Amino acid sequence: MSRRPRRNHTPAFKAKVALAAVRGELTLAELAQQFDVHPNQVTQWKAQLLEGAVGVFGSAAGSGPATPAIDLKSLHAKIGELTLENDFLGGALSKAGLLSAKR
Image 1 (tube, rainbow, N blue to C red):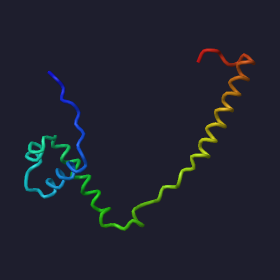
Image 2: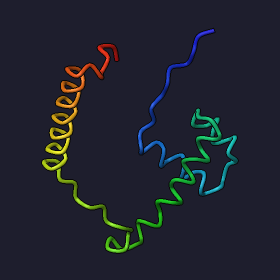
Image 3: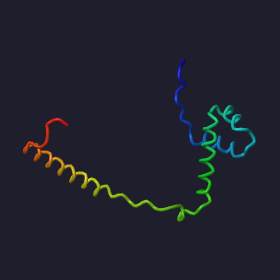
Image 4: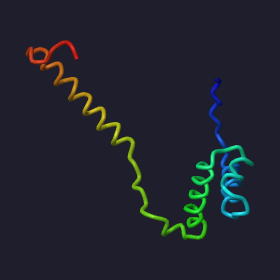
């Protein structure tokens, strides 16, 4: 028995299926058969469409909490600092015989 290859559906296809589900002219089973997808997938895409529909009519200012900007330079500096400290501590402990050679 051969396995069916995994399919990636385009957002346009998902929207088409979800809109057909929202219209309610066909049952989920009929839609699934028509578009050759699983009925659970139709239900998930319909729920995603209905959740995302609020954002279409909502204002951009009140769309939720803004994420703070991430400063990559400071994060890279901190990673370098911690790596340097870790290497120094590892070297000092191995010289003192407190750190085994095996990890």
